[in-house]
Length: 138
Image (cartoon, rainbow, N blue to C red):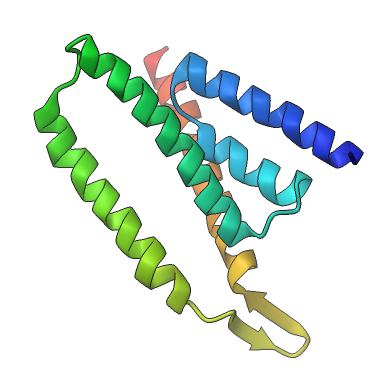
């Protein structure tokens, strides 16, 4: 087993602990680990991350449902459309994105790189939002 795999598995455990403790942040942490440490293609890494976070949410949701702590109206309003949107995006939109989005001279913007750039932008905006909301409370 390579060192990068051992580091990747260790970081995956930390992502699991993060999911267990705060209940969110799994995708934002797992995609970079899968892509940069475990050398998984970004398109595949987003699908893996979606599965892991979805499975974790399902387990937590079942536990809360058994304790009658789930507002099923809210699940219907937010959860069902989200699942449909993810299914349609992964089934129809992502496969139809061309492999090379932009090319100029020796530069090519490929689908995997564009997805990681978009992911980085979302990470930065999320961090700024958390910092801003934290300073606004003080």
